[in-house]
Amino acid sequence: MGGATEQDISSETKLEAELIEAMKRRASMGTAMKSFNTVILKFPKIDESLRKCKAVFAQFDEDSNGAIDHEELKKCFQQLQVSFTEEEVTDLFNACDFNQDMGIKFNEFIVLLCLVYLLKDNANGHESKARMGMPNLEATFETFVDAFVFLDKNKDGFVSKNEMAQAINESGDRSSGKIAMKRFEEMDWDNNGSVTFKEFLFAFTNWVGIDDTDDEED
Ligand SMILES: [Ca+2]
Ligand SMILES: [Ca+2]
Ligand SMILES: [Ca+2]
Image (cartoon, rainbow, N blue to C red; front, side, top):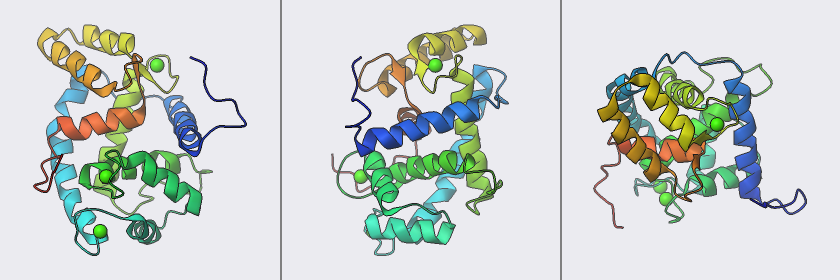
């Protein structure tokens, strides 16, 4: 895998690199997940929490067009009192505008907020828990991070296919294991055998079935 050299690293990979580093730092703190099944068992609660997040999304979608645009996102960060540079806002926007329609839809918004949660979790230590003022949602984000850390056995910031298989074997539940493996293949879009936290989140928002917006046109 020859990658970009340090000099010509793109903003996208710069953000990705920050996310990997943030995840590695978080991974060094360990996980509360005991088994793959504990991850699965949390699905209904995650689903409920994310559905509630729709009200938050609607609040920030000021013109109610079903997507958060760049300006709305900046206001969103202001209100949540999280500070990013202009460049960081753009990078986050682009990284999460998965279908590249220049707007952050609900499922993209969940991913974006969760990435913000991860990044700010590591911010110099003076921002404590409940840093975004949405404790319920942050508990859900923590579950996502925790699940990822649980799966990422070697703590390199990626979940490999082997690590996924290992987690499933430990669980001893073959039927949900098969499903999980299929999901993993769906997650791994670039087919390189490992999944980043962002890919994991996008898949997750689909698994729990929140992506049921009626204005889909794809
Ligand atoms: Ca809007
Ligand atoms: Ca979009
Ligand atoms: Ca790994």
